Length: 235
Image 1 (cartoon, rainbow, N blue to C red):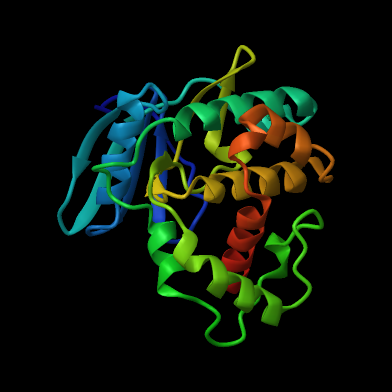
Image 2: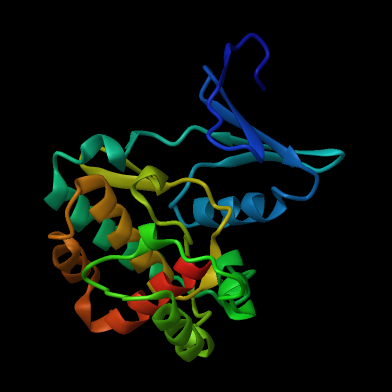
């Protein structure tokens, strides 16, 4: 597949290596068994026109995953167009969440949240937002405990719906990338990461309401977004 192509290391983490081949392919390798879920969910997203094609998944002593390049640039290249981002993110996540999660494997995020957290002293304040306030670790523990059983597994979610994981071309989001957290899950996980990522990349929370309006306020539970932030802060 990559014979005669130049390879470039585009890895951004310690658990996997990612290489870009200049014939338009991405090659990812990681420990045995760790890419199976991502490969499966990549195929699901591609089947719905929401992700690049998965060409090959090979398991062995090391996992290998080969996908086509997603067209366009990720949304971090378009922070000078905040209203475009809000409209496109709201529209694309709405489309994604209209897909039933029935028959799909669960998002790893659902499993992690439902198993419970708050053990030890971990409390990651960087994920907290002024618009969804949590004053202390104790409040986060109480909020997570109250909402953990309310998490639904009814729609297809991306699981890490941040700006770097959505691709824009000609003013339209064309696809998602990185499906390691995708699966059947709770829509508010995606909504939390979307509003958090907008605030982080735009250095302001002023566009939260605009994004949620583009998504559809009738299906937004702000208390659930706050609860997801609590669960994430606790690890």
